[in-house]
Image 1 (cartoon, rainbow, N blue to C red):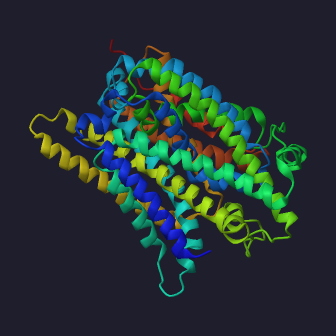
Image 2: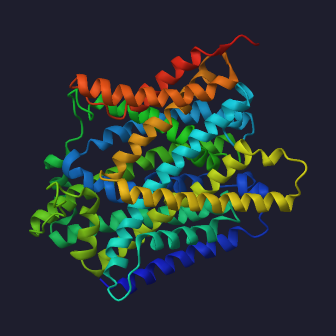
Image 3: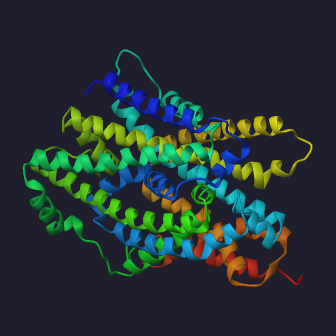
Length: 493
């Protein structure tokens, strides 16, 4: 497939994003950047959140993992569904009642400034690592199948990542959330179409018909969903409960996901958005898992060699889908894959730049309360922060490229367990107890808790037992955080 054709498709897609940004950022203000003037339609927010939640991780890594993990990922997704219900009924009413822009302002009101900044710090750390991982995956595929194929000109990975981040800056720095609600809706559409059309192309290539395809998927060993060995990391109870806590932490306690929800017209609209989003999320993930089964069946059907790691002799799961789409299914399938991947790439990090800027601007630097700065000065500082985070993302992606050796989705969920645990612990104490905390000691507890969790998981449980820690890591981390916070209770009223 011609690299020039691929680059042209990416260019057209980016042109669509620029057009949306131009139309939505007219007469933009600080209010539209941070809250979208509280005028975002709930259905646009709901559909846009699909692309932000799925990103390149689901698009590439989830189908590829089916070869080794079967449908076990669905256990986690079912937990997500319950977690979204908790967000809708517990967290959103509090955020709307307090009229929040940054959700970590709640922590300041409840405990104090040090706690607020601690919550914001862990969000910033979590999102930098998560967004970098997602971008690394998508950018790596584009690098391997596009730029590395251009023999006449050597385009290094760092340069291709730089181009992607610059393109994101062009359509996000001005409009903020008001723009992102609509660009994410645009991107979610292409992301979902990418997987549906890819399924249709494989079914057509195998000449089996839709009914036979469904039958093949259901009867396949790959479609095994529920696992009951409690020692293993894929044990249903661990995956399901872990999914609940991951959803609450990575969506409900995450500024990136909540800022869009808080841009809705009312609490009722925001709850409606979460309800429909949770249903569609389960359905779309089933499509991605079904695609994974069809991928491996097509490899066997067409006698195509799976992409292997020469050193380990194992399948490189993150290349299973890209290799088939770009090298074996024809030009149309390749273009569909590239468009879907481009949507995943941009939706992975564009909103992160805006919400990282929001949390830093409001929680860490408190520019929103600074009365000595003019609106123009505040706008300039907001832009500098926005650009600064793009540079940080670039640096972390390069580090990922040097160090990463495992499926990205595993890496991201593992990192989430360590970075979102303290957030979960802080909000748990705030929401479900009447305790006050020694505000100055909260940062110490929240830094020590992940360290203790890491030692416990890797040097105690892993070496002394046959038990495998999975996605319940976030629960263990949150529990240790809560115990630590209880030791620094304050007696003030």
